[in-house]
Amino acid sequence: MLAILLNSATALTRPRVIIAPAQFGTPKDYDKLVSDLLQRGHPAVEVAPLSRFDWLRIVPSVFTKAFWLGELRPAPTLRFYFEALDEAFADVGDGEDVALLGHSIGGWVLRAYVAARPGNGAKVRRLVTLGTPHNPPPSGFFSAIDQTRGLLSYINANCPPDPAVVTCVAGDATWTPTIFDLFQRRPWEEAQRRSPLLESLVSLPSYAVLAGSGDPFQIKGDGLIPVQTALLAGCPSIVVDAHHADFVPTALESIKLPETYPWFGSDGVLDAWADALAMPLAKRP
Image 1 (tube, rainbow, N blue to C red):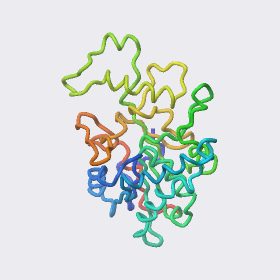
Image 2 (image 1 turned 30 degrees about the vertical axis):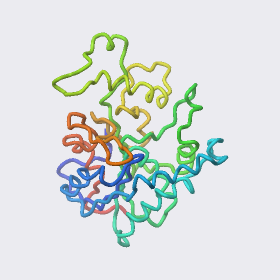
Image 3 (image 1 turned 180 degrees about the vertical axis):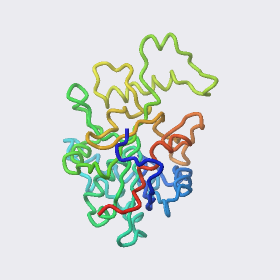
């Protein structure tokens, strides 16, 4: 569990928060999370202003030699994302402390951004990642499949996390089924208004690739990212009973998932990691 979490008697200061969205995410998808963090005392919470159209700016990289060789680099591939984060930092005053919150790929984008923008990076006192695929698959058949086409390898090699700053949050609400589960678990759980069995089956291909496990059964994760993929060695970690997101992005409005499908920002789950964004009252040098 989280090594740096302070007990309830410790006085905390809650800095401005900047959120880096998941792939295809937009600020509107995080409205409730923004509201909840403001209610907890953060003076300002802003989501990097990405639109659905902005995400199309990554397409040209597909037609480069670096893409096919698996040698993409954060710049220029993530320029559109860095520009949105620059906008979010525009109102941050000199000497003001900032906590960064990265959802899914937003977590490793923030690691690259802090390294690429040392001026803004110097203001960062906390970086919390939610369901971020930090780690490539272990050696084996799936290790050759790099869905980031070199981006993650570069970031892991050149943007090492600071354990005093970075906290990783992983979800373990969904695990891949055993053969026994297929025959014993009901296809629909009325009390939960969900189908955990179907969720487990859907998670299977993602977990198998990302975890690189020869045994694809009983891998725990958030439905998309396995726990072991979302945690960085040496950094404080929190594992919560949560799914990857509460929305499914579309070309127009995102589809909001029901409250019976808890994610990292859901009531109760947020309590488990929210203090990782805060700092002791006395500022760190």
